[in-house]
Amino acid sequence: EQRSKDIVARADDMDCEEIEEKKALGKIFERIDEDASGELSFDELENGARKVAEFRHWLRVLDIDGRDLRQLFAMVDEDGSGSINVAEFIETMYRMKNTESRTATKFVKHLVTKIDAEHQSVQSRLSEVMDGLQKVNLASKGEHPTNMQKQRAITEDALEREFQSQEELIRRSLELS
Image (cartoon, rainbow, N blue to C red; front, top):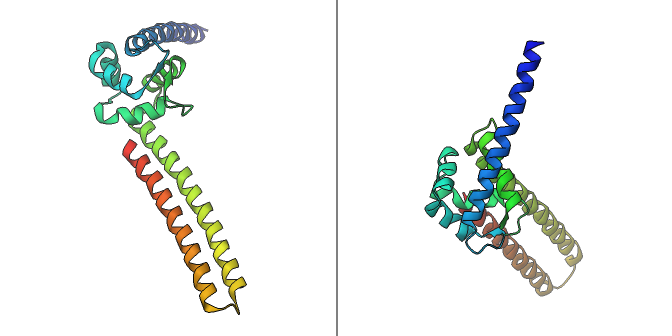
């Protein structure tokens, strides 16, 4: 019974601490939100990391430095809108500080998940292109060699554009890290 009371008391303490930390994060958000728009841009986040001491302290506790800010922004911007609203900021920053896993693990998981999704997309598109190549090859049997060469050149150009597009997506993802 005493153990049960201890757990309840501990849970109550944690609830109080959560409320206080989230209030503090709300105040930090307001100080970082230079234009008072209710949304943070990456520039505001970056400036806040330099100018707002309380935010710098949070980042220090999370072991996040200037090189990690772009990745942090991508993680906190959960809806991918290109800006961070107050709810995203408070919830994500609170979870990052108070979960059992380390921040670095969260960064890696986020990156791997994003790269895996892009990889799946590349595989799917490549499969479509390969199917198209097979159809061109089947359809071109018995055709004049010039027509076959034109079809092959068109397909190769499309494939090259697709690879360049995917390569650029992956490059941008890696730049975030």
